[in-house]
Length: 143
Image 1 (cartoon, rainbow, N blue to C red):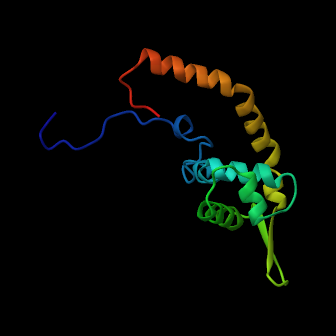
Image 2 (image 1 turned 180 degrees about the vertical axis):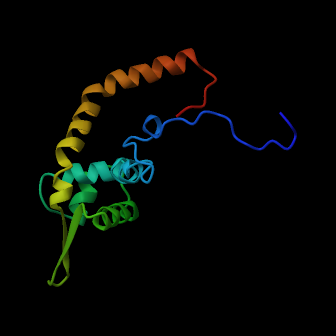
Image 3 (image 1 turned 90 degrees about the horizontal axis):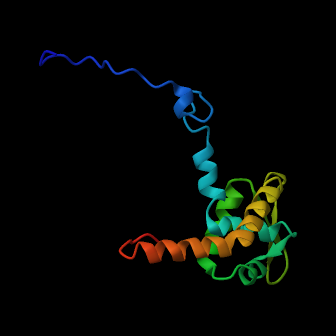
């Protein structure tokens, strides 16, 4: 090959092999964007809790162990922005606010509940696998 040769000669990979939907104009089909939102631990827990019906902010905070007020505020705002949660303010003194799933959010509940159920069913197996891995790989820094 000459020093001035700049042509790429590698065989390109077919788009369908890399892209879930195979469309060049939508390389990840929005999957990553949606999973970033609904895949974080707080969003999943909020959706699971709201699947049981509308909740006030403090009810959500009490029901979701370990979530701070700031993180719950961010989570419900993000879910509201994505059209998964509806925030309703009632004109009372003091003002009351409740959160409920939208139709789109409600459509997620069977998936999120299945994930939550799977997590509960398999948590002991996963904990044991982690313990075994940690025992056989004492120098790792994976958490």
